[in-house]
Every structure is written in C-alpha cells, then in structure tokens.
Image 1 (cartoon, helix red, strand yellow):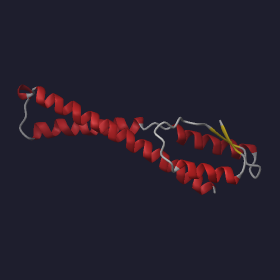
Image 2: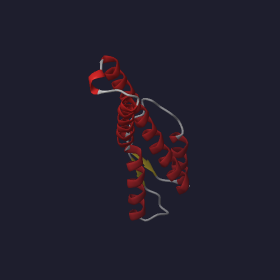
Image 3: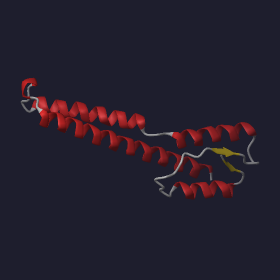
Image 4: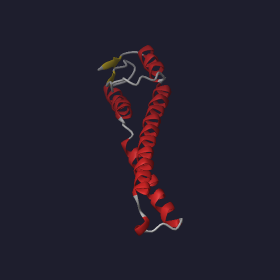
Length: 124
C-alpha cells in the first residue's frame, strides 16, 4: 500500500499515472493528507482505489456483444441463411468477437486510467 502524505506525493502519483507499464500491478493507495479530515481522506482513498482496480470487463463484454450481434445481423442482411453457415462463417464470427472483446477491454482500461488521472489532477 502506497501512503500519500503530502501534495508532493500526490503530484508524484499524478506523474506516475501517465507512464505505461505492462507489468504494473494494481497498487492500493491510502490518502493521509493533514489538510483534510479522516472522512475526506477515506472517501478520496476509496475513489482512487476504485478507479485503479477497474479492469475493463464491462466495456469488453459490451463491445464483444455489439460485434457478435453486428456480425450475425450483417450475415443475415446480406442473404445468409442457417443452411449456408459453414466453417468460414464460424471462424469469422469467433475472430471478430474476440477482437471486439480485446478492443473493448483495452478501451475500458484506458478510460479508467483517464478517469483516475483526471481525478488526481482535480485534487492538485
């Protein structure tokens, strides 16, 4: 757990959030600024840790479902039928769905990081 005891620590966190590290472990933070009371410190700590732990699962699932439904809709609107479904269509469906899930997950992770950066910036 990283304890933030001053505005300089908070500024250091803000700078560190801009750095991309693929091996970054989700670190928890504890805000302990003397200018704020314990309730404010706990509230800010909870918000920062909530943003920091977001994994992009919701957006990944949402985009995956959109791509899945879009692929099936496109197939049938272009004259496809159940009788004509073959290996090529199934591989296409699986490939597009997997790419959609990965893209959605990455978008969710970047959005959560952006929210965390903006939140810490507002605290400064």
